[in-house]
View (cartoon, rainbow over the protein chains, first blue to last red):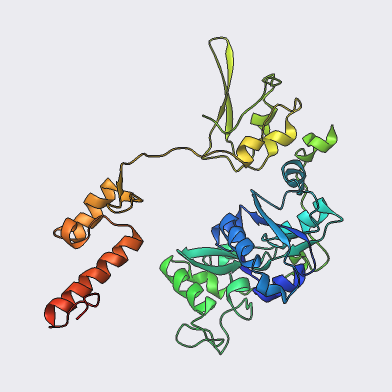
Length: 229
Length: 140
């Protein structure tokens, strides 16, 4: 899922300073589950932002708080999310994809992010999320025992660990495991150790998206959309 | 009650069933009738059924914003001083009862405010009881 962190309150306050009416809107998908941008966090942020002391003497905005199932689907946003009258800014607790979808849907009302979108991760333990995937567009997990060296090795190495791997840990510190030590251990457990001898050539980074935003069109799906009729 | 609802424009064309990416919709033709079925645990609430319905029959708002289902009803224990509900009788029996040998004397049914007052009074009585000091409100 997409994991995010709420921005510092001062940054959010400076973004909405001068606004008269702000809609704070949570997202009911990934950021709800990782406890950073769901309905509960939106309500809490709304309460915090109502404190007039944060605005240094100027009038705090009138805040309303709502939540939508998914902010990243434009037709759902257009169809089901209404802007309260007089709203002069929207504060979104969604990931960057959701913020941009709202910005398209609510134009010309400015949409301000309340979250820093941080990574694509998974929850190994309740309350802990770890980065697992960079969306490089060319998955090699079949050869690396289901452990991604692109996302989980600090150097994104493809052919074994570097010299900074010590005792199973990465030299970057902070208790970060060496991805290649983990890959070796699991390949051994699964009887696939021969795979570690396979040399990976230069990775083709073109599917990673540096050539502009990536897009996928599923044939037949869009044809039936509301816009079509 | 299903959260997936259609209005009377539905003509049973099954566009929603065929286009549901989560296989959460199914249809059954039984005894001369077409029955549309929805499985909430499979539903990704992606809105594809609503998008593709040629009749505008899918009332997707019920899957976006809906009411609450009552899951369980339990009897409540109330604060014996002010009557504020504090916990269920089951919680009292299972949790409070297991923690304290004699809940009624060690942990009487009191709300947070009255529990604090009760604790303060117990402490005061204990201190006063141990020493020769007279209670504060008694004038000498």
